[in-house]
Image (cartoon, rainbow, N blue to C red):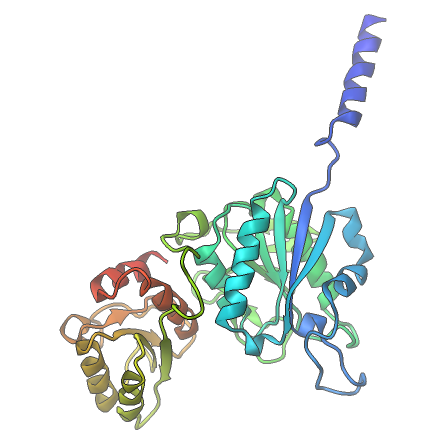
Length: 352
């Protein structure tokens, strides 16, 4: 009899325990993009980004209620081709704020795919939480035949609620595939499997709402990052521009940017981060005037190491390592809030 009563009490305790059957609490922060886009007609290849609100997106996937307690907030409603520093700072601030709450276990950010990798990387440097942050979008608008937004959103919410996603930094999820923010690149203009992680491989996969991770995130991020939002405003973010290399590139573009007062220049170089003699001479001159110059490759993958084809020590340049030009721009911009010393900035490029 006593054994029966003990078992009954244990069962009752499990039923009443608030954490025993609780679903994860996920905050969806919407910024617009194709996932919230609408076509004029289904035969129309064009569409309007951000036509639907965060509430519309959540209601379109009723199965979400089975895997998480959802709350939503509209941070912005734009196509990601028009993403800007103001939205980045606002979004990062909200992510940090909501993740401080015990009522939030993870964040999902709906975002256009064009600049998703840049937003994810920026967040990886300034978010100060180990809780999951998952960026998700779609390649087809919400009104398209076989739209991919609903399944991508379902996977994103499941991933944000997965204990295995903690401590990995911001993640990108599309087409059942998980990418680390540092590694993710949009690599095709229209295909569903547009995102790749060409240097170190994908982080993992989603299968029937469950996350399977293949590797750890080897770079510094979030709580281990030297960077933060403290004191950052749109006005005081250093201006950094990207110069794209091609045959017969002259030095006048670099000279013009120096004249405009830029603090940093990222070279999207040919091959191993190289460029023409004229452009390289202009970059050396820019570095001599205190502009920090980072060499990257336009090829989309590979390592741009120091002093391989270009004598970085002699010219005073920084090697971009594995970062593509658009991500190197973000790291350089934040690095310049700490120092303008090229040697110190090179250390950041080794670690992040």
